[in-house]
Amino acid sequence: MGAVTGAMAESARAHGATILTGAQVERILCKDQRVVGVVLTDGREFRAPRVVSNANPKLTLTKLVGPEDIGQDLYDVAKAVSMKGTSAKVHLALDGTPRFAAARNEEENRLFLGTNFRIAASIDVLQNAYNEAVLGRWSKRPTVTAMIDSAHDPSLTPPGCHFVSISVRGVPYHLAEGTWDEQRDDLGKAVVSTLEQHIPNLSEILAGVHVYSPLDLEREFALVEGNGAHGDIVPGHIFDSRPIPGCADYRTPVEGLYLTGVGNWPGNFMSGVTGYNASNRVLADLRRTTD
Image (cartoon, rainbow, N blue to C red; front, side):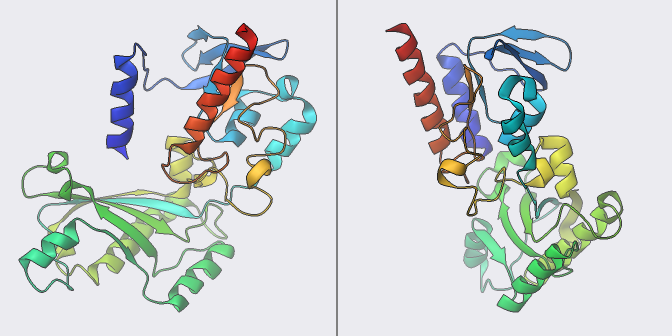
């Protein structure tokens, strides 16, 4: 995913765009129901007649603007949108090459290294992980999706080393007991134990483990409740009800403020469809006001 966004950034710069990173938006500035710019947490202000937010729509509509901007009714609806994040991320640094138990020779192992592989022991294990998440617990036999990024881009690691990016499902944001700061390391150990059943030499080459709990995903990446889809794509939050009725055409009640990203329909994954739709909405409105 980093390669895709990197290519997008280079294309934007080639067309004259300036991109700021590490610049957190404190507030979207509005006046008389119209957007006028943004202010950063460091106090810098950027004035603009149009603002497109790729943040979670709930975050945009309840934190970056307020009820005085979008109206109390719409603000209350946005605030009530449920996130129910149930995912975590685990990154592994490996001082060596993983050896898959299913690989019969070096060539098969090389092919395994380049796959996006999933581990779910059985339907019962999947069901149990779901049941545990509903009860505010995470399964000690987690379901994982993983990719060895360095197999595709060796520049990510020193020669002979590897980096593994792992998504863990059935991990609730809201815990029934304890806190994520207390349980983060235990989740990492459970994920390593699960992987080791299929990569027997994992512990021998394991150099580091970094765990992003659902709470960490919210803290560090503004993923509300750790929900990577910016709100589950379920009945009541699809089609013209995504993200909420009244904001489903990428517009908001604030003139010049637009929404994009996976929190909008059709959402999910890196298709680019919401960005394409939102940008065309902006252009259509621009043409309408200039004709």
